[in-house]
Each structure stands twice: as structure tokens, then as C-alpha cells.
Image 1 (cartoon, rainbow, N blue to C red):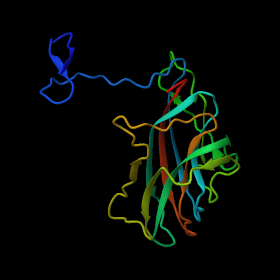
Image 2 (spheres, one colour; image 1 turned 90 degrees about the vertical axis):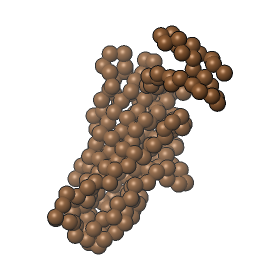
Image 3 (cartoon, rainbow, N blue to C red; image 1 turned 30 degrees about the horizontal axis):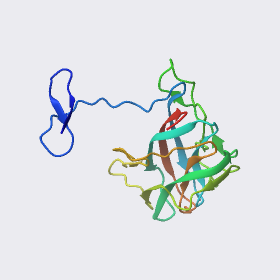
Length: 222
């Protein structure tokens, strides 16, 4: 059944089975009202003897508005030889009862607002922390939070006893929030958030560089 008439071409757009003229669509960002869209990019290291379940990166919603994560890309590169070859992973967890961010071994990155006019200053109601740039075995500590029972996403890396020298070491890259094509995103209310942690205890010798690119919108309703 034809339901929409094109204002320029006069062509009809049909719904359901049948020949249909393609639609011209311009995707729009999530409406932000008086709030905004933001982005943060950070880099830190995994250290020698990096502990299992050690927290490496986190975001907490401190406000009564909603935070909608729109991108969380992780890049992971081995930078040093390991005591022994090991399969490690970084896990993404959704957090609730997140009443305080970590206070020890933390860095507070500077976030950017996507538009200086019409958007509230960065980082809005988001509190972002990542582990000390050079890496700390225990990760970040001191926060108050509750993790979901299972991780929401995971990225794996086979860490080598000796690094290859004949070619460039290629990073492992994963978009950890791959909710596209109409899938419902995470919606973080006040005192909710996300965190990335190390999964496996690393040996006395270890070394990785991790980059986290994170984008989000802050809205009053969704």
C-alpha cells in the first residue's frame, strides 16, 4: 500500500510487499534538548602482574538525567614480552548502585562536547575515570558499585611470550557497544554506569597499551 508521496519526485513509498521506490533518509542524532553529546578518548597500560578483575576504566552517571552510550571502541596492543603466553580478556560490565567512582590509581580525562553552542559543557553528568596511564597492577580502587552477574561484552587478546620483530604488531579492536539497526542501547540512570576490567591475572612480566574511545548523549527522557 502506498502511504507517502514524495514532495520532489512525486514517487510513492510503499510499506510491505511490493515494488517500492527507495527512501532518501538523513539519520539524526539522539535529541538532547538543553543537554548534549560528548566524547572522550583515553590511553593507559596493563602492568606487570595485572590483577584479575582489576578495574581499568569506568563511567558513572552522577545526574538525574539519562546517559546513553553511543560508542565504546577498545584498541588493545601488546607492548612487552610476557612471562608466559596467555589468553587474556577485557570485560565490559554494566553497573548499578554506583554511588562513588574509584579514588585510588585514577586519572580524570578531559571530555569534549560535540557542539559549543546549544549544548551543556562537557562532561555533563558523566564522571569518567581510567587507571593511571603507566598502569597499576591492582587497577582502580575505592569506588562503590555493583556489577551485573555477567559481562555485557568482551575482547580477547593472545599475549605472547616474545613479541614478533619482523612485522608491525596489529592491535585488537572491538566496538563493545554494537547495538545498531534499531537495537535498544544501554540507558544509564543516576548511579548507574559501565566499567572495563582485566579478566586474567598476568605474570611478573607483562605489558599492553589500551585505548578507549567513548561517546555518549545526555538526555532528560528516552
